[in-house]
Amino acid sequence: MGFSQKLLTVLLLSSVLIIAGCVSTSGTNGAGTNHTPSSKLSHSQASTQFRPAWESALVYVTRVVDGDTAYVRFSNGTVEKVRFLGVDTPETELSRNRPNEYDHITDVECLTRWGLKAEDFTREELQGKYVYLVFDPISPRRGYYGRLLAYIYLTNGTDFTEELVRLGYARVYVEGKFKKKDEYLKDQVEAIQKGKGLWGACGTHTVENPGVVIVMVQYNAEGDDSKNLNGEYVLIKNVGSSAVNLEGWKLMDESGNTFIFPNVTLSPGEEVRVHSGKGKNTKTDLYWGSDKPIWNNEGDTAYLYDSNGVLVDSYRWG
Image (cartoon, rainbow, N blue to C red; front, side):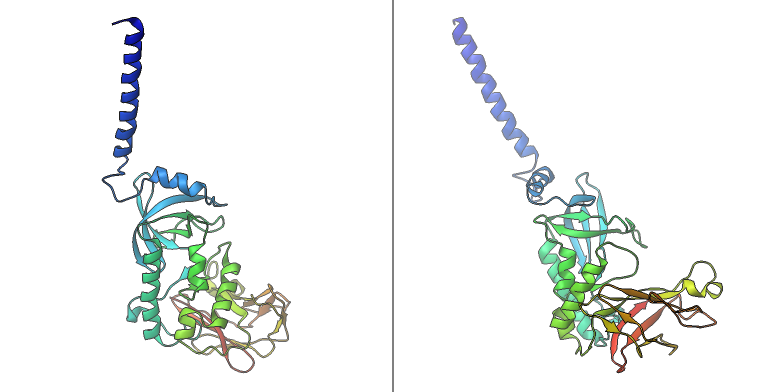
């Protein structure tokens, strides 16, 4: 065999080996044997569609637990339980739903049905798919039970967590800090006004000023509550589009302790704190004037009524 023929043979054999190697590599990635998509392929596909602005991770949803919780697998094989940040869907067990936890809805059987609907919706949209976990820059990475706390984004850039609120499957879980709280609260107000999801199915909402909400209750003041009464407060915000005068409105706890609002107006986006102790009222801080703590650390409910006695919002814990 001449030199040129030997060279041609070597080149042909090299080409065959290269092609065989590519086919072998494809098979190793599980294209023909594994129903779970390749994480490398999904990273490549997702990156051409959407890049989260905050710290994030592309994960595979292995199992949906309920409407706001799922198990996910990271690219290194680690499996974590994730609680969707900033939202709360109803429980799927009747005994675990409470009256007035979702605004003034008292029909816990209806809430339970919507808890199941939320679970079905989340499972259909997420299970067996790749999504982004997006971590909030001001929120803890993990919650009280050790679960990851993150927003869920689809690879096309849709904030799935926000969709739960917008479509009426969830309420905004306002305890703690997260960047998207105001945005989610506006979605909730709109969902209530339009009777979306559980808001339309589980109760009649005749609130005249749904733009005013209880954002959070700081029920556990730093140190001894009885010695730091003003460290205990309720944060109220106008997330609507028009100014609201709060004169004559009432803030109450489960025991009937009542604070009556003075002449104070909240413009859109403004907020006011109602402290339990004594002090001089300002536009941003009001004082209950109590000599003892108002809010029970183990569990209580803050009720906000307008001047006509209509329940505008409530906030429950414990």
